Length: 182
Ligand SMILES: [Zn+2]
Image 1 (cartoon, rainbow, N blue to C red):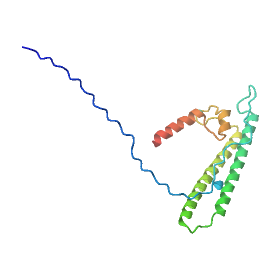
Image 2 (tube, protein in one colour):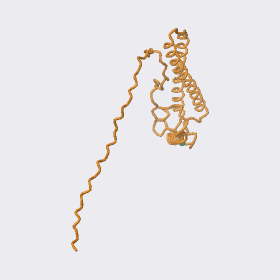
Image 3 (spheres, helix red, strand yellow):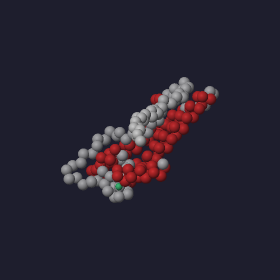
Image 4 (cartoon, protein in one colour):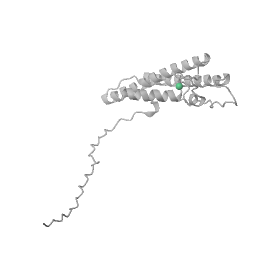
């Protein structure tokens, strides 16, 4: 009995289908937008105060009297700046209050107004926060994390003078928030 030698036929590898990444993306035609004057677009006043960052002295206690004084100055200046910005937005809304006959003009104007109102709202909230921070300095409660009680730190406060939490607690909060919303 002869055994047939079975020659293995090399199995051809199936050609892997390439995932087509080229999806015909429907390009949205952008209608020629009316150009909104950029000069008056409200922006949140940033915290670039003219006050130089605080230089701690050697062995200086955290939140020393001089440090507290520095942050009060920073906060007050920021508040003034925000108030000016709010006034500008207010003036702008008032002077541009006239209605346009063209519905496209009206729509873009309404959009602009809604944007400016939201900006004003954020500014108002920020001014409130600044006021709270100033109160905290006066009560010697400023600069400490509300969650863990640790130092928030001069560097962080310099960047965010209204910070109420240390970076660790803040990061943790943001992660939790993301988990809840996602
Ligand atoms: Zn903390």
